[in-house]
Length: 248
Ligand code: G
Ligand code: G
Ligand code: MN
Ligand code: NA
Image 1 (cartoon, protein in one colour):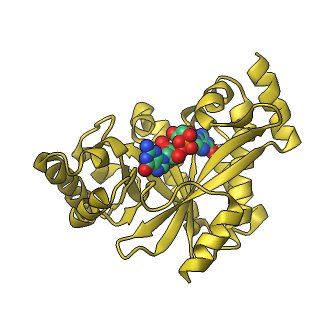
Image 2 (tube, rainbow, N blue to C red; image 1 turned 45 degrees about the vertical axis):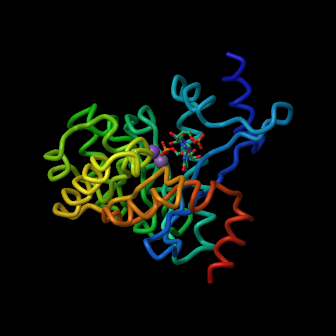
């Protein structure tokens, strides 16, 4: 209850902010960012999303939170014309009838090129709800928005699924990336995921890259993009400006 009341106030007071984590290609160049919401509480300091997204999900606050995140990300994107931005959508947010028109309205309002926005939903969520989810994904894609399946492989839905599902990229779950270097089987597994994805025209992000070796092995396995603490941590908008400028 208290968290719910505080979160409602936080949205109004502007206590929510976005951190951005870069995604880079094999040569190290930044090509995209993932937006990650944070709550800067006046007394408790920074509260991670794992503590308040579930609360928001149980109420209608997830709608306001989702709109806030998307609007802020679309505004911030204007500073980085060459980069795509990923925004996470949670299950209940995606189950809402109005989700597609909400995205369309915010793209229009902020003058955002839809092709630069990737909506991240978890693999397990995508699989859960049959036709409704598929229709929404197709509607978003026909706006030009990209769809990315987060935590892919964790809720193993099978390869066949990828072929028929309206997605543009998968983010291989970090549990697979964490095992790279610990056994040859893990490299074979990641390569297999990459090969199947590429065969059906789907891009692959290796997420949770924490070491030089994991990066090297993920590159060798053929992943297209790389994200993780080894490359860059989530950072403030101001830090992202510096980070991108240093690279240019
Ligand atoms: O940043 P952190 O590792 O604490 O994120 C934890 C979880 O919160 C991740 O699963 C991430 O997808 C989710 N998350 C982060 N930002 C958002 C957001 O803006 N909306 C939703 N729905 N989930 C988010
Ligand atoms: O579920 P999702 O992939 O959206 O989760 C994103 C979260 O993963 C972010 O909150 C971010 O802080 C976290 N993250 C990003 N890179 C790494 C990493 O290399 N290792 C770990 N353990 N977490 C990471
Ligand atoms: Mn994500
Ligand atoms: Na993930």
